[in-house]
Length: 435
Image (cartoon, rainbow, N blue to C red; front, side):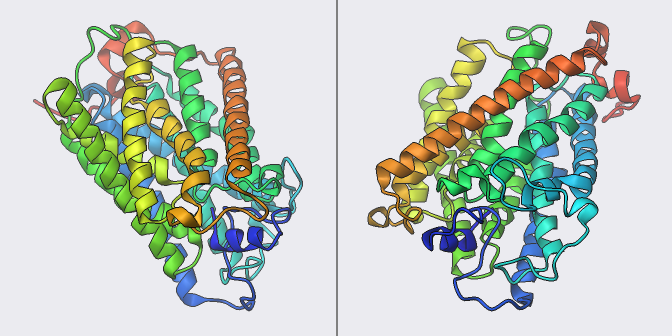
C-alpha cells in the first residue's frame, strides 16, 4: 500500500514505474534482506487477516439477527478462502507484474518467478505478496455487510470471485501496481480508494439491486448481540495498525507515524459519533461508538502515512461527522437497505479521507508533502478524479456482475427461508442452542 518507498519514489519523479501502495524503501537503500522489516510485515499480514477473521465477521455478526449469525461468519470465511486462491493463481500477477496503464501481466501466475527481494524494499517478494493478499481478502468481505440475512450462499461465492477479478484487481493495479493513477500522482497510502471506495460503492449498488429485507425499515429487530459487535470492532481497531502501519513496508518512524495517526483518527471519530448521538437521541450507544471508530479508521486509511497527528484528529472528526449523517441519509431518508452501512461508513469515509489528504498532507499542516510537482489544487484534482472514476468503474461493474449472476443462480433466498434465518435454511446449523 504504500509507501515510504512509493512516497520517496514519487518525490523522485518515478511515479510512472511504481505505485504509492506497494512500496517502500528509502532512496539509496541497498538491495539486501532486512530481517526486522520482514518480521514487521509478516506481523502486519497476520493483523490484517485478523481484521477479517474474526474481526469483521464478529463486527457484522453481532449486528444481524441471531438466526443469521453463522451465515455472516460463513460468508467471511468462504471469501477468505476464495480470494486467497484467486490471488495466488493470478491476482498478484495481474496487479504487480509490470507497470502497464490498466492491468498487470501474467508473468507471476501461481506466484511463480517471485524475486528473492521485492525491488526497492528489503522484503522477500513472497512476503510482499502475502501482505497484499490480506488486503484483497478483506475488501470483498466488507461488501457482504450490504446484503446479509437474505442472499443465497451461491451468490456470495460467485459475486466475490468475479468482483475481485473485475473491480479490485484493476483498481489495485491503477494505484498500487504502477498503473495510470499512480502515473498521475494519485496518493492512497493504505486503501481509501482501492479498498473503501470500491467496496462502498459496490455495496450500495448491490443493495439496490438485491432489494431490502422483508419488513425494512419498519419491523426489523435490533442487533442481536452488540457485545459481539464491540469485540469485533476492537479486533478491527487493533488489526488496522497492521493495515495502515504495515503499509509503510518498513519498521521505522514512518510506520510509527501511520499507526499513531490511525489511532488518533479512530478515537476522534468515535467521540464525534457519540456526541452527535447524545444530541440527537439523548443516548450514546455501544453500536454508535464502534461504528464511529470504524468510520474514523476508514477515513484516515488513505492519508495515514502522509499527515501528522493534528491532521489525523481533524480527519477523524470529519469522518465521524460525515459518515453519521450519511447513514441517516441512505437508510432513513432514501430507505436503501445497505444493512450494515457499508457505503455510509466505508465508502463515504474512504472517499472523504482520499480528498482531505490533499490538504492535510501539506507540510504547513504537519504533513509530509504532496507528490512531485503537485500543489494543493493539482493534488486535490487528481485525488477527486481518482475517487470519481473508481466509484464509476465500481458501480457499473457491480451492476453488470449482479445482473449476470441473476441469470444463473438468482440472488435471494425465499421469503420463508429469510424468515427462518439463513443459519438453518441455508447451512443447516444454529449459532445458539436454547434447548
